[in-house]
Length: 217
Image (cartoon, rainbow, N blue to C red; front, side, top):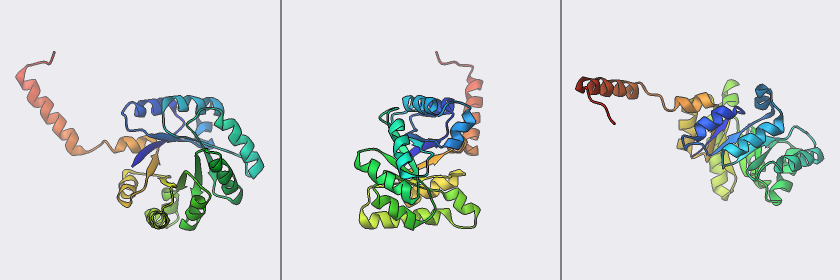
């Protein structure tokens, strides 16, 4: 499973990239607004921090303006992935950009039928939102399972990018289902490292080492 981080915090991105675990970045207008910086400036900096796809979202709602915004975003770097909403105009834009060799992330997916449409439009990634699904009483992971079955039935190349990830269990379940990618906030990714037995083991090793009175180097 590929790991993307869902943030516009360039310091967090650089730190996670240094671990070798980071395969890409997803952003949205809300995340970049929180940075207090200029949109294009932030996207350009992020593209320089990772080799993988960096999702940059259009803000227009009509196809023609989406295409104009996408043209500007595509000039930033070769690893820019244009993010479009799952609407009729969004899928028109997806089709046009995909045919032109551009990576496209179709976002705000909440049903398997929507995911089917995105795949048929040539999306590189489909972003189903599991956390928001859970919030209203639906099983977000069942959505991922349904999409996986449909995509495998027809050998669609579109990758399932699990979004709105709230905790490590979402990541575990997505990996068990066979999702291609997950994107999560930095804090959720860092939580994957944590286990009380790991901490206890380190403490024990250090205590035993201190008793020897030795140093390395």
